[in-house]
Length: 103
Image (cartoon, rainbow, N blue to C red; front, side, top):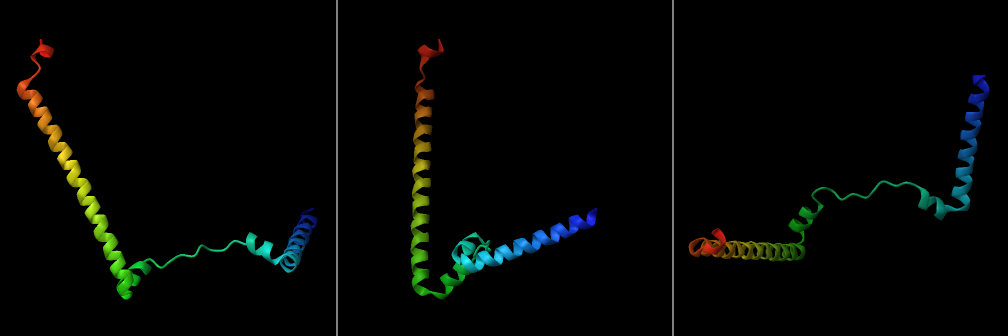
């Protein structure tokens, strides 16, 4: 009973292989599109190597990094100023107090 099943599995595998070969010959672009390919990966330090080896790219990278650091510093400074202003408003409310609300 298992021998006919084994034979049918072999025949099915052979038929699928033949169909694949036939499709690859007749429709190469379609088969290329349907074939899995590993993702192209850059080496882990490719950008670092480019920064170190290409002076123009290094200058561009450093300029972008400086701009990003400047923007971050400006955002932090603005946040600190907002916090200090809110602190001063709270201190003023506490000093002068709204005695009518407390009563």
